[in-house]
Amino acid sequence: MSEKKVDYLNRVIRHVRSKEAKRFVAEELHHHLEEEMRSLKIAGMDGRDAEEKAIKQMGSAERLGMEMNRLHRPKVDWLMIGLVLLISLIGILPSLHVSEELYNDTGYLFKKIIYLIFGAVISLGLMFFDYRKLRTLKWGIYGTTAMILISLTVMPNFYINGEAHFRLASFTIDSTTAVTALVLSWIIFLGSSKKALWWVLPFLAVSLSSLMMLPSIPAAFVFTLTVTVLLWIRFKDKRKYMVWGYAVIGVFIGTMISNAEPYQLERVNAFIHPEDYGSHLGYMYLRNHELLARGGWFGEPGGREVISDPHTSFALTTVTYHYGWIASGVLILTGLFIMFRMLRHIQMIKDLLGQMIILGGVTLFSTQFLYNIGMTLGLLPHTGMSLPFVSYGLNPTIQTFMVVGLFLSVYRRKNLISYRETEKG
Image (tube, rainbow, N blue to C red; front, side):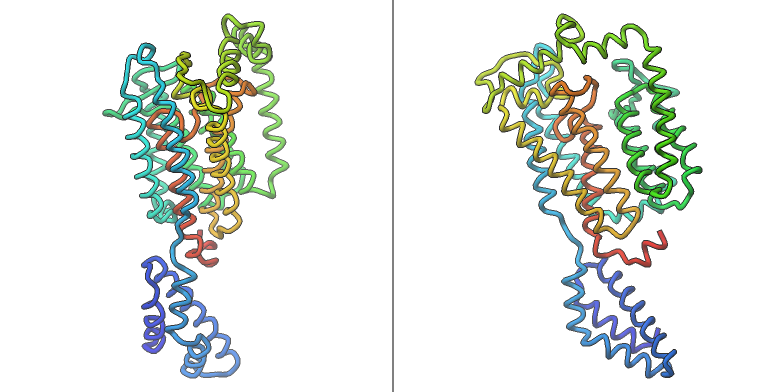
């Protein structure tokens, strides 16, 4: 690069404040100058004259630098941060109503606040982290994911409700950890690799089989739906093959249901006709309807009803019963707005990896959020599905804040990704 060109670029980027934007602007302007010089040389100019004319056409370095600083500085989605703060504050409420007699523990509120602070730190750290570096870290992430799955399937320490858990020091690895790691691995793979669909399907089978071995039906459901959406967008020209593939899977699942054990069919019937199983499997469906109705607009004053899993699976029931339909409505609308906020930015992202991060994140979040609401309202069968930002637990909190943090990282750099860079990815 000639001294004159270097001096011009240095004078331009002197006015650009962000270090990330400085590199981006310098690379883009250098590319533009090279393209313009090439055109001028083809038109008959010699190298020196072509360079001078190309620089002159760019205009004042100071004016261009100030313009580039305005256009290409990193962005912060303050609205998203505000929405997350609001729903997190609402999420503290269920921990205020955990029965000490039932759970023999009074530390849920303190732990919930600590988990939220820890999650917020992770989210902010990821926002400043350049998500494009995930491409260089992919093998480490793949390896960590494999170790998590091996730990849960081969050497679990204990089981809760039949689901494998593995304790590492004071941190517990469970199906939520496995789904988070698996989805992140798939996001990186689909956002970086140009492999055909046929290469992807065997890895999908291995991933899904690993989750089924835990076993955790909610985890397998969330993972399958999330990766299905990613594949649907990533391989647009192969959608008809995917439809046939999932049709086969549907027939397989239908066969399994037809051969289900009597107690499994009884659970399905209890969901469809809970009044016929009111003393046993249908009790929670009827109980939830009662508590939701009693909440009214502003909640039950001094309500002392004991709610099953009030801070985890049925956190929304707790909020509605104690604080009313308005509070739960604000919670639901905030969650829906978070989904909308993420989805509306996908078209603005030029980088495939960035698109996969937002798409995978919003699917992971919305699947759990919408299912938990449907489960609470009695529209879907009861499972251990958590309510993002609201349900108690370190692993669900980390998962949700990772989704937000990676979205903020992509949003922050949406004006710092060139088309040439996306082609390399």
